[in-house]
Length: 121
Image (cartoon, rainbow, N blue to C red; front, side, top):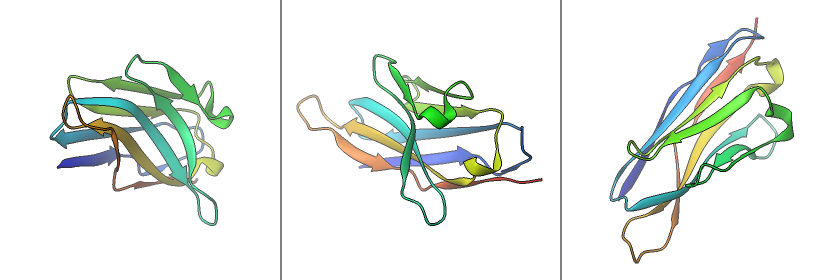
C-alpha cells in the first residue's frame, strides 16, 4: 500500500507565491516520475510540471519561468514552487507519482488528494 499526501497551497494575491509539497509513504522501492497537475472549474485536468528520477523536468508553457518542480528521493517528496501567480492559475492541484513497490514490480500511478489554490485580491 502506498499513500500520497499533499500539503501547502491556499489563497494568495495576484503576484504572490505558493509552495506545494507531496509525500509518498508505504511500500516504496522506487519512484520514477513525480508530477503536478491542475484542474480549473469546467476544464480538463492538465499537466503543470513533471520531474523524472534523473531530475529531468518538463513544464507547461503557461508556467515556464515562474514555477519550479523539485524532488527529494530520500524523502519521497516532490515540491512545486509557484511564483508570480495570476488568477488563471487558480485550480485544484494534484500530485501524481509513478511508484514501484518491489524491484521486480511494475510502476503504478498514485494521486494525491488535491488542494485548492485560489489567486484573488
